[in-house]
Length: 218
Ligand code: DX5
Ligand code: ZN
Image (tube, rainbow, N blue to C red; front, side):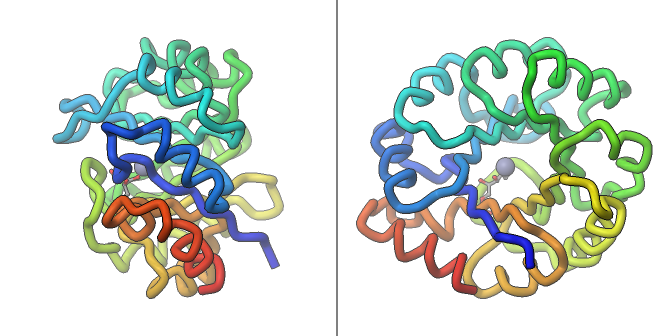
């Protein structure tokens, strides 16, 4: 059995207290910190950029799993790498040269991930699977926290797990993950669960540890 890791998405944190929220989620047992970067172009929302990320980097020693929802993405890979990313995930849909983007991440010495939107087939990963460290199956249309899990993502997780085979590649799922569906999501093959609203709702740090535990227990 694969260990399941929990990646709280700080998109649902209180941005006015971002560093405190990162410290709280670290103390509550987060395995990695999921950092959502949105540009108002690739997705219909804007979050923050590398300067803000760099300033919260000091708040935790946990890995930063940076999910870039931006296009073009290549001009910004180095900036996020240098702002403290441990892994950088780009979208297969973000540009015509996915292989080049992956090489750019690796050239920075970071773990390379590729995300696929709900309507994108896992098969786009077939020819890059040997070059990446993480596959991200989106289970909502990216752009916002708090959306409902799209059930078709379960079959995509099974397909991605089959494509990964014995390779040491993380299989991450992002969007609408909570204690009610975490079990079937893990059974479908995911081993890195992103959770935003199901952990941060209410922004009360006293609730975070129990919510992370609820996901793990599920
Ligand atoms: C959505 C982001 C997610 C988001 C998940 O575009 O990529 O990481 O924060 O939020 P929840 O868990 O609330 O669906
Ligand atoms: Zn994300």
